[in-house]
Image (cartoon, rainbow, N blue to C red; front, side, top):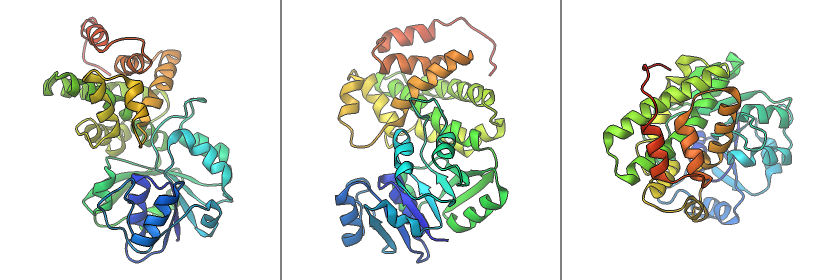
Length: 326
């Protein structure tokens, strides 16, 4: 199986590195001409993944039509651009493995729903889990979830992509794998705020625990399974993303906690902090569905300028005591 990778950012490049292991030709589509040139000429992506030598079997292109020769596509575009990028390509009936994390802002659709609309004949799978791109590209041990409703497709893709240092666990719970990855981005912003505000490790641990409760409530409302949310693509990814400035969302929140304006931080970023786009739509859906998500609502209020950090903290800390339950 020849794999194509759509998206030349850090995560797309890291996945191309995994796909090319063992001398397998891998074609990566990137929007930026300088990324294409650097990968083909110097086997590096200095713009998004500096310092990591890339497998010479990775070839980059800016022509999406070239990926028509690939048997399956790893889709690693920013979540808000996935629909428009897929609309540009000759999709046919090839499998699409969705590797981005988020919810489409305008429609409120999960990304597998977007992909099914854009490519109705393509089998859909979701790859998600606790992954920092530079570690994956450097060959450090990583484990992820691969979700596919067709178990045979899931096993076929696992056999093609997995490596000893890149373990893949298969499930058929596509919604669960996607929801974990989307919600954790918003919660990571909240944890970054706790760090930037200097509120301590106790506060961050409490936020991760209560944030996981919010993730679980939301996931169960949309048919996700509890064990998926408690696995690599949910709790595992939440812990990683809420614990390091290597996370774009955590570092965004840290800046907000330190007193910088969200608009300033977002305009100054080359890479996308998906949680900033996911928070408003996630908060809206939660309100419409009556799902209690106070941390998500607080992050939304901060990002939209509706409240200050101190006000939001006071509101959360003054919530009435309750039994610890999801």
